[in-house]
Amino acid sequence: MNDAVIGTPAVRVREVGLRDGLQMVGTILTAAQKLEWCRRMVDAGVREIEVTSFVPPKIVPQFADAVDVARGALSIDGLHAAALVPNLKGAQRAFDVGVAQVHYVLSASDAHNLKNVRRSTAESVADFARIVAERDERAKPVVLGAGVATAFGCTISGKVEERIVLGLVETLIEAGADEITVADTVGYANPGQVRALMRKVCALAGTVPVACHFHDTRGLGLANVFAALDAGVRAFDSSLGGLGGCPFAPNATGNINTEDTVFLLEAEGLRTGIDLDKLLAMRETLAEWLPGEPFSGAIARAGVPKTFGEKVVA
Ligand code: COA
Ligand code: ZN
Image (cartoon, rainbow, N blue to C red; front, side):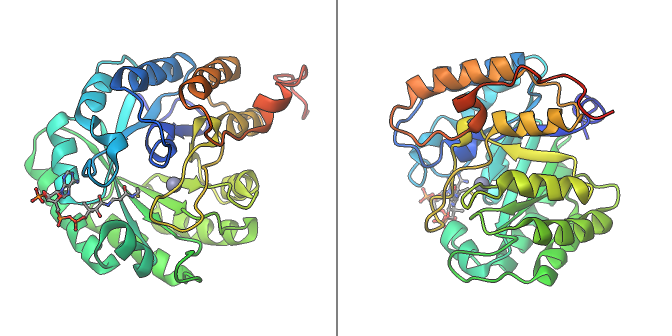
């Protein structure tokens, strides 16, 4: 894993607003706006951003500029630029641009995988092996992450068994994943379930870094972060203003909110290296760019407490 990423903050906060956050919004931002967003997040101390998604523009028009945004992001100092890919073709496009991290996603729920990427989970696992082979053929170093979506339940098929998720994690690591992300795509997870599953995932992953990706659809997003911390997870996806949601999952809503997540982590004494005031300023700009979108967040509404930053726990 990239030295610039590992070993600096106590907890890694990975911004996914430019990808998850934008994939359901009505307004298409320009590449220049997206890159300003990236620059201002980096200025606020965010080091990892999923800057785009290499999907067909016909499916998600917001990402028709994926190549331009990814190229632009690569020229931003201090940014570890990641991109989501749903298949081999997406990975090839991302490898061609040379992003620092490629994030491949498949769903534990076969029904969601079929809706989202039009193939079974087993076919997506087979595709991952092809992506690893393609990575290995290319000389340029890239972090290849693999994400297991709908890991805590699915709005289409309901319960997702732990053993399915654990089996996928094991297979993806054996196949060559450099990092694992476990995602609650539809906001079904609760803290007890998160603690139990993530303890097992962390034990299974060993030295492979593990991240969590939560949506706050049912109000338990930050409680789930807390439970995942307890289980040993030290990297979280979040979205500025809490935008987000999978267009191929019924009733999907936004990711956990970056501002509130940073507030929680810093209040816990876990250094993120992120400046909350700068995040809030960028959120205001984003709200001007995306009128009518469902922004969430308690800190933006109520303000940073005067006591923030004081050492509360002796
Ligand atoms: N980027 C750009 N073009 C792509 C592509 C990619 N990642 N993957 C496939 N294509 C192109 C193919 O070249 C082909 O083009 P052609 O018609 O000009 O020959 C066309 O798209 C269809 O290719 P196919 O492999 O049959 O794809 P599909 O129709 O089975 O769709 C996915 C599969 C994965 C591309 C599609 O379901 C998808 O993009 N899903 C992601 C949805 C998403 O963003 N979800 C939220 C994030 S998890
Ligand atoms: Zn998501």
